[in-house]
Amino acid sequence: TLALYWGAALAVKGSPRHRAWGKLFFLSLLPVGLSVGAILILRAATFDPARMVQFVYLLLCLGTVGTVGWTAIRWKGQVERFRGLHFRLLGPAMVASGALVLVAGAASGQKLAMILSSIGLGFGGAMIRCAWVREPLQPTWWLGWHLNAVLLLSSAVHGTLLAVVYRSLVDAGGFDAAQLVTQPGTLLLALALRIHIGRQRGVPLRFTALRAQRPLAA
Image (tube, rainbow, N blue to C red; front, side, top):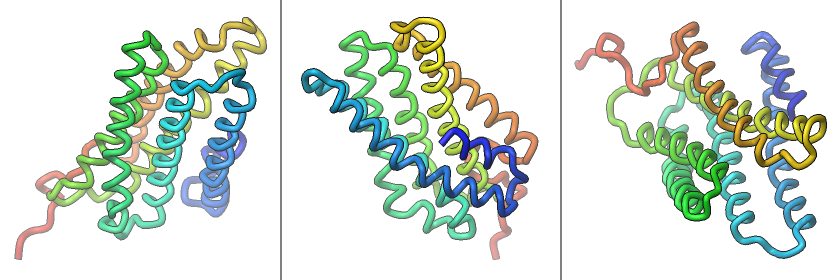
């Protein structure tokens, strides 16, 4: 998945190579996500409900963000199809599950869970806003959502990988501690890159068009 991500990222945007590697990257997310659940089950000496809830939450995030990133390109000329029933259901599901993980993390003192809850709350909240806003969307709305998804997935891929590298090369017992640095670090980097790339390509964070961009009423 890491190789596919960079294969798409380094290719000319919109080129056949970019599209081919990008499609394979999105498709690879499903087996990666499911394999995490299998590993958790096989490695656990006893069933851990809290860990499985966190896994289901992260799988929902992975599937939702991947779906949004894929459909933003495929349906870029069909905004109502893009924010159809699936979009309107997944947004609240992300927010609700993110809130649950936040409360559970706060109650148990799990800082990583509280950090990861920001994905559901932030991305899901943006989906709800986009789903129900009635003003015309800005012209590059589809590219905005594609960037939102791809950069968030970049954080997911690299945040965990960096923690694994730290565990392998520095401290065999430091995986959880490393994630408290790598996960928020890559999330903040993704946000910074979203703002920077958005300014370069004329893709703002907002959903709605400026008044000057809106079509005149008949």
